[in-house]
Length: 297
Image (cartoon, rainbow, N blue to C red; front, side, top):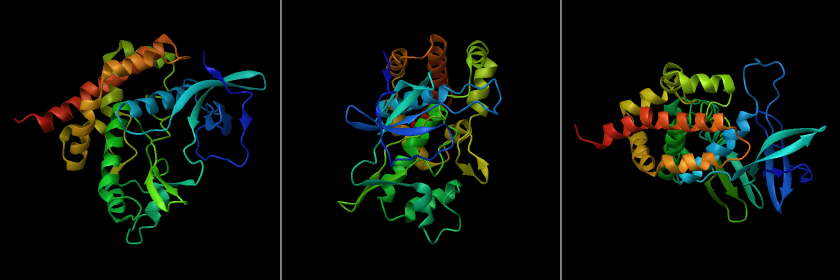
């Protein structure tokens, strides 16, 4: 049974930005969580689903952890607003105590030699800022960046921009560390409703369109958003290739399927959709890329 967070203490003085849905801080079992609510459908196309973002957030964050990439701890639950029960994703707040979060956008702005602003996602600019920033070992940060890219490719994340990853700075120890992965609600086609899910499961062309054509990465190469399939299967970036060699052997589809099967509050149709979508991206994007760089021609 999912946790009902309705009667939890709301924590004043904590506010969270981001465009997708309302967010509040609550205390549950002595721990602070950010509750993410589904965005309102008001003024939006009616065929889109607005609760799936919470499910995507939980499943994708959990898969990051299964891959050995530290991510925010999450769980699904409910919260009643004006008598109406809403599905929410509870995300454990990692900025408690003396730790403060700085997104990569703000860190990128500290690189005075850069000609681009902090929000710019051109790959060459991001790589340059990673090399020039003074907070984290550039080699460690580059590895993390590309590990996340490979996992995002598996999960179909279209919105990993400079504002939703970064560092934790501990004021007591005057030290910085890479923040856990968070804000994964743009993975796993969150706007797909039941009709879209059925179409993707029954028509190969519909599934392939969502593998080979979209979603794309938020990163850009020469001004155009990176197509995951093209970029990974061509194997032109050595750092991306190295991350694929690290992450691909960690992907256990049976473990992922078993995890998805046990997620509460998700329909059998949605579970089958998520499993099929992840397996297709594994087989059609990551496997060809991995084979290209590991098996001599």
